[in-house]
Length: 154
Image (cartoon, rainbow, N blue to C red):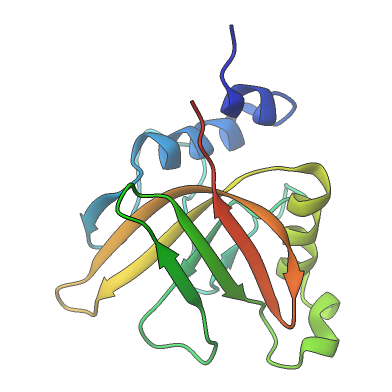
């Protein structure tokens, strides 16, 4: 019997599935340096943008919240590791949300209920540290924030 995650990602390509499985398997882990896995055929995230959307996919694969940013992200995490995350869109003008391809991609995640990975930077360079929150489902958009809730993939 398939678990919730496998049902949600069943229609995705194998590389995308493997990245999402990585986020699920590494939830609540702390990693030093930039998160990566050499065995994957796709990046987990990009340093260039907070929202990672590979050019060959219609969905965002991950979001990351850094220490130095122009946007206000709001994380509410419980002791059990579950979270609610208000992730501010790319483009500070909320009326121009859909001008950014990354924001349009997350809207596809909402429409098709495709999870994405969530990464939070805890410490800056040169001793960078990141927390892998795991997978989230983007539930909607409100006043410039994408509303992401942790996925219980069991």
